[in-house]
Image 1: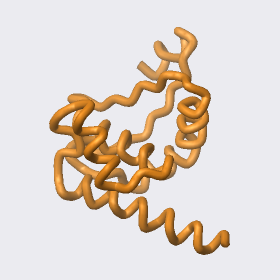
Image 2 (image 1 turned 45 degrees about the horizontal axis):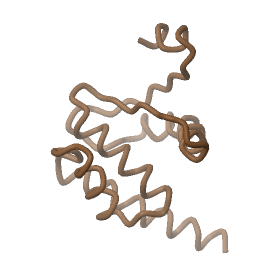
Image 3 (image 1 turned 120 degrees about the horizontal axis):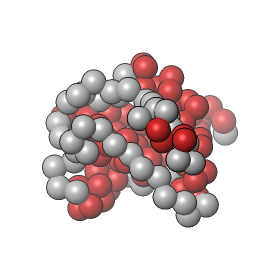
Amino acid sequence: MAETVPARGFDWFHAPIRDFSAPGSAFELAWAEAGPVVRERLRQGEDVLLHCRAGLGRTGTVAARLLVEFGHEPEAAIATVRRARQGTVENAEQVEYVHSLAELQSLAWREIS
């Protein structure tokens, strides 16, 4: 897929997350490159495709992450993603991860101010 997608005119970012897990360090390293591009595409009104094997836990967690990065509260972000696709953000580890993002953003904003 990593060769096919760019050949069809799309950007491809691989940000690995173990199945049924929250993102870890490998994802965070990849997201440092992919995240700004994805957010800018969304700001421009472009479509973005997120996927994992079933399109539930990992996909939902990253979708909720994007909403938190755009200023949504974690619970609202999770609820929005779950309304779009039932069963997303599958477990407590993924929910906790989404909540931790808001805390990290809050700390980052305090350091900037």
